[in-house]
Image (cartoon, rainbow, N blue to C red; front, side, top):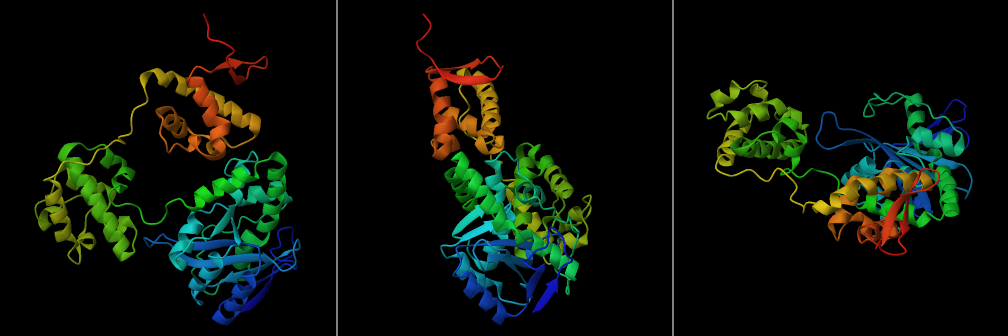
Length: 406
């Protein structure tokens, strides 16, 4: 366990410019016992996945208030030295876990601890309800607290030990003031009547599927494979799935299993033997070791006997008479987002509008706070109960119709 004093500055991570580095289980257990009694704490992670399939957790940064409303205490936990899985008990408690841009952190925490936080507040999500469009952590600190975070070294090897004081100080700054940011945001959200909206959106994001990709769908991420047709597409889909499953099993990046270019090559001209495989451009012996070559040949042979999976999403097409409404409604939503000072991407995207107009019962605009703000007005529009018009300032407004035209 070490105590580091950071150089004085507006972004000092702790109450006295200090933070605690924890690399023993006993001290970590003491911190977890303390966290179990707070109402909220901030968390961030540092990880790498350049040489692995699954993210490698390198640091866990924690911040909490020893004194309500006072400066946060900050601890950096070394998951290479302690059992980070012990954090599970705190995550499962009825405590608000405060994060910024949570998606990757949640994936890492679920992998390391086996659970997601029971309650989560994402400062980036909340910022969308205050007129900011997916702001960086630095931009949010500047807006809410007038603090300027150091950019640090984005290429830092967080798995290296020992880390120097400057690296640790940079990591600590990611959580040191996050509870104050949340405090400011909640005051503004409450003033605007949007606290529930932000909380609902954070919960939707908390429960979003993450982690290992569906092997049967990864071919859609390879542009050249998407352009294939017929048997070639069937082979491309099967080889992409095989590559994904093998990469996960070996915990290596997919490019270390088989290159994209090679998937396209074997799809267009399926090899029949290992010698054929070795002649494929961008394929060398390392991709065919430990039986991988023979396994791949079997996958290719089997794929040639089947039709490809549908290349398009088979959702119902938007009815022809509703297609003109999509452009109009999109323009109105953009106007509404500006008027309300809400990030348009949070309010409604094109896919949301299409789903609503199709009558999809799972449409995001048919539920929660969006239903009354966007969903119901759009329903009235397509039902002929409302109309879009320009007001004197040249802005689109959606208003009720007093009567149908004769």
